[in-house]
Structure formats: C-alpha cells, structure tokens
Image (cartoon, rainbow, N blue to C red; front, side):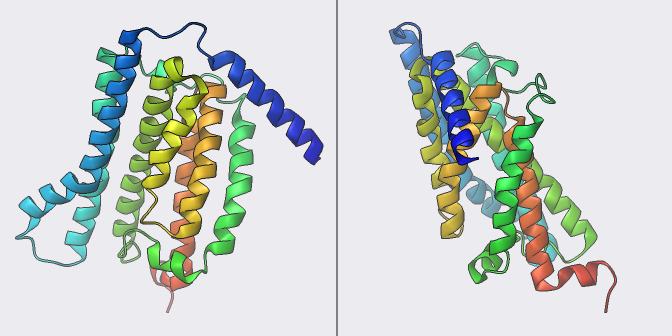
Length: 261
C-alpha cells in the first residue's frame, strides 16, 4: 500500500514538474509583474493584521461592549479580510497579469473527476481534528468567536462569515499567489506561497501552525494539478466547522442550543 502511494505521488509530482516548468526564460516585464504581486501580498497581509483593527477602533469605540458588539466585530473582521483577500488581488491579476478567474483556479471543470482528492484530504485531516479536540490549547483557541454558542443566530452568522473568509483565503493563497506566479517561478511558487500561509497561523496552536506547512504544500500541489482551488475551499470550511463543533461540544454548548437542561 505504501509503495503504491509513493509511486502515485512520484508520478503526480513529475507530471506537475513537466506541466508547470517555464518553457523559456521569463522576460523582465513578467518578472516585474510577479514582484508587484508579492508587494501586493505584503500590503494585504499587513492590512489584515493591523488596518482592520485600526478602522474598527476608530468607528466602534462608542458601541456598548457585550455579545452583540463581539459579533459585530467578528463580522467586520471576516468582511474586511475577505475584501482584502479577494478584490485587490483580482484587480491586479486582471489588469496587470491579464489573468481571469478561471486562470486563477476558480472553475468547476473537473470537479467530479477530482472529487476523490477532496475525500482523501478530509480523511487525512478530520481524524486529527477529533484527536486534538479535547486538548486545552485547542479549546483555548476555538471557536474563534467566543460567543458562537450564545444562540443559534450568533452561531449561524459566525459560521457563515467564517466560511466566507476561508473561500477568499483560498483564492488569495492558492489562486492569486500560486497561479499568478507559477508561470514565472515554476513550482517554486508553491513554497513562496506556503511561507506567508504558515505565518498567518502563528497565533494558532503550535500543532496547527506546523500542520499548515504540510497542508499548504499539499493544497498548492492539488490546485496546480487540477487547475482548480475548490478542494482547498471545501476542505478548509469542513475542517473549520468541525473544529468549532467539537469545541462547542466539549464546552457543553450543544446541550443548551438544542434545548437541553
């Protein structure tokens, strides 16, 4: 079994190398455009780390503290970073790189054909979620919105904006960063994407941060192999919702939500 898996992975890797190795040396203009891409990546990550909070503090300082303000802040957080992950990168890709959404992996083509990849990814990740779900560090970090279990309204609003954030995150890292640079960098675009992807996990538990390195490489390779980024979106959302559900279960919140004593 292991030998067959190794053979299959080796074959897929060679196909990736053959498909995405630049056939000729990129010219100065193409290199400059990719440098601009990474400059925009830096600005987006800076804005998502600091500017969203500065704007919130500027306009929300007079709102009375409480669960509703906490929910509003999380909606603002998800909306702001989703905008930054999606809109400026798309405009840069369209106007500067001359790439459309399909070129960036936003396509349903081959979805059914590659469905087994999504299943395999979830089969590898979900057991780990169940194993660490009761860990103290895990419970200290999840759910990211502490009042998610306060009511069904809070929970559903939070999980909806949480999912939106993962959709745009995948577009940013596996779509824009990967497909925007691969034609110049070849497969070197994968590690160039993985480094900042891992760094946004620094506030998360240690094991999750380490796992993001492996996940980043795997999702990057899958995106290039299938020319689509829906695998990462589906896996990310499923895992995130499962992690929140497990955290709420360990807190005993589901009993309250379902009308128990």
